[in-house]
Length: 254
Length: 240
Image (cartoon, rainbow over all chains, first blue to last red; front, top):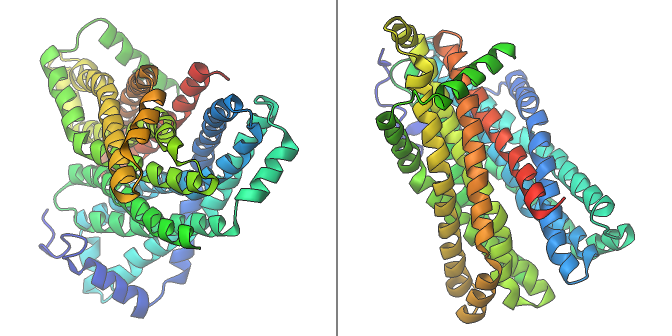
């Protein structure tokens, strides 16, 4: 069952994976229709789950925040705290986690089964670059889906958290709005969109690489789904810290 | 849906009747714990580092840096590190269980077990169940410890916060109850994930697409279940 392409796809950095993906993405034939198809698939797959996940997270943040702010008698602080946490950390992180479990694992199994069934080699034989046709549209679709998903996610999380804070937590609505106006800056929205996009791009690349590196049979395809989730999340967690450190430099001077 | 429920109740009944072998369960405890230890430590550490950074940025704005320890204790140790560790382990181990059971089914091994008179639920799924329920709460502890250590290192060495006030406010706000609640979340979610993932494995369709689909669905459902249960437990414990 071993693929005739041998050890060509090993390792994300050392292998030709990044080089060939970059080459196909910049110079290869663009498969626009396929990219839109993958974008739609991402939205279909992750759209509802992200709402189910982010709504309780908004509620948890509101709840824990109110415990602290009620003690110091400043319930309206929940506004900027919730919006800030959602935009800067929670919404991008949970979109990334969900894209890794939902879409990343699917990419790894799809490409993995294509390798096992020798469909990737077939692409090469008939002169179609598998990176241009299989990898680039998937990564692009996922990367384009991220800003849309994170917008919906952050809006939902904030809406759920704030309505909980106002109704059950007795936070004053006018004070909450004023607090958000005072502390939340437009740059926070850009950070939110940028982080989600960066995470999605990373997840797409990692998952496709894992999928193409599959060797062996059906059991290996299942294992690839698992590996894609684990590696994507690990890389995103590290990336998150690096980005936060970079923003720290920009945030304190700017 | 009815078939899924039937598998789930059968599994719980099998475990309740004590048919699961201790030896296999110990192996699975080691599999889950050892297999996720490093990842959980790394994720916990980066969460601690990140929350220390974010807390520093917000507290710097309002000029009360001595609250950084309290912020880390409340945000990272109480809420974020446990749920991140649990959701990550749920997705990882959940997809592992589904993939391995689906592959066994595909190769006819589950039928072979039934023919030889061994209950596949007790033999295959039972040990995973015990493994998750025991190891996941322990992984929460690993995540919390890693988060606290990493937050300290970032606060003191990267951000230049003075160690004594940081540790004082961390100690004052990190209550043992939070650790117990985190472990309780791990136990409940581990139990649910074991049932969800083995059910997905047992119901997998044959062939590569079947295995792939079972793995993928199991990962997503486990992950979503983890966050929803996390909210419910937080709501009950800290008052809603």
